[in-house]
Length: 198
Image 1 (tube, one colour):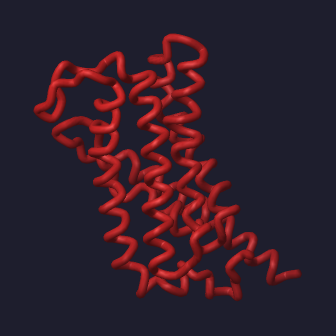
Image 2 (tube, helix red, strand yellow; image 1 turned 120 degrees about the horizontal axis):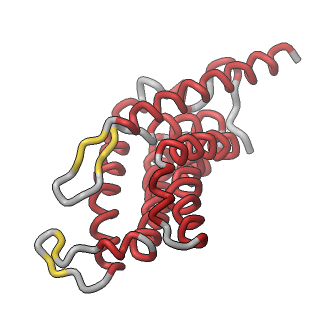
């Protein structure tokens, strides 16, 4: 009973710290020449928690992080010209887009599982931004983007969101693979008798 309580406290403290680190990292952006910006590995702390404690806990942590991101970007909701568009921004650009990152742990705790988890969940996040990019943000589509004439908000959204999300995915994959081996006990929850959830 005492051991379980210690693990729960550890879990809460670690998760709170990872959310804080992810939030700080999300505030430091490198603007890309064609729009969007790459953060300093802001999703990696959420990915690590999901693999360490399992995807259910990961989704809860990612959801908490998504609420913080929503509060930081609340001004963007005003760009929705209808209630439905505002709800779309809240859900697809924030709540769902960031919460799906918590599913990374579904794939297990091996190095390859972490790589697959990042690839799949970042793709899901991209799809969320892609939908709102065409549906809501498409009204601000320029006539030309990345040297191409823009004729469809769907193409524009794919290019705009794909550009920065690809950078986020690649950077996170590279760093996760580099730190996996030295931090393997942490990724796998081997400290304090933690076990991967079934």
